[in-house]
Picture 1: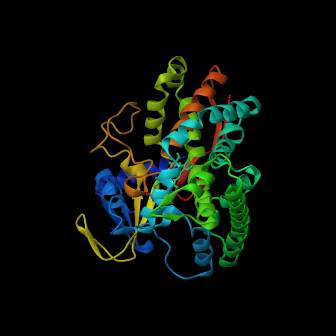
Picture 2: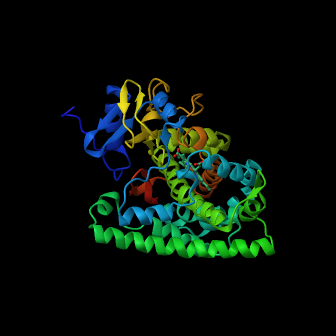
Picture 3: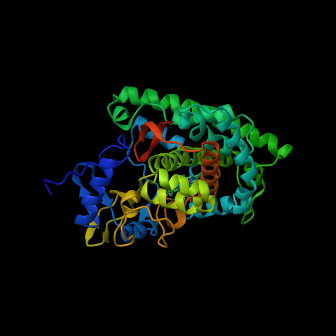
Length: 393
Ligand code: HEM
């Protein structure tokens, strides 16, 4: 194992090196143990699904250890459904499923189209600044029924501040605490705003997910204002950058493949399948983490209690055992990719993301008779890869 590079490359080149690293490891086997990080890596589709289907063995509550940084992170993620295990997760998910239905998402289509059209009418050549960055937060604010969108925008900016992964990793402990304290300040400010909004919405209801969550009831129990505010924050954390990067990846792909772009402009009914295939090839969230709850035998290895397990969506999505010619763009494949996860934590916002990306892509194709990519810079935030700047010509 000494000659095996166990450290994944950064995503600053758009994931080119990372894809090479993942391909090499996946062809060697399903599992890899990176001793220096105490972490298992899972590369193949079948094994990835097994880990994600087994919350009794693999926990989503991945925060262990005691340090000032960890205390702040725990506070930030206190109400995040994505960090919960059953039975708490099951209860919270039942509330969410009652309130955030596919019908609620479908009703947002005219608003998404209007927001997209407004953004496109004033965008400059950088489609990230003009479209992909502002769109998802604005849509989530509409979904929730939150009037102060600036508050949500500034929270998102704070959450993703601090530079690239490499830069953040090289911060001294005191610089890390200062960064986290700044982020926590923004989170607390937004949380207080959302809690007081919930209070006033209990007295005078208004349309939106906040009120649906206020009204939803599971086994005779209702959510507290803190829980609703925490869930609303979790939607922003989980739904903003991911959607921004998926839309950016789609725009980048079409800008680099003029014939696919022309086909979709001529026949927009192909857009949903195109989005799905670009999503498979370039998932914005390239991996998810789990923590072993106990010592467990898994696929011929022993994973010890409290060891991390890194499930590589980007590797599973190109597993040749599941996808023939996995690196080729072939829209309409029957096998499902893992871009939205799998199992009990499957993405709550999947229907919204799909709708938003389709509406926005169609609008871009109508707005620009044809476009090419002039320059691109990639966002690099741990496991998120996609354009942070995309200038078109
Ligand atoms: C391209 C866009 C998106 C991608 C790639 C994505 C990806 C994912 C993935 C992979 C998971 C599973 C995580 C795990 O297994 O630990 C997940 C969960 C989740 N996503 Fe998304 N997501 C996207 C958009 C959204 C949007 C727009 C929202 C909300 C507005 C959202 C809300 C959530 C929530 C709340 C969870 C946690 C669900 C649970 O634990 O039960 N996501 N997402």
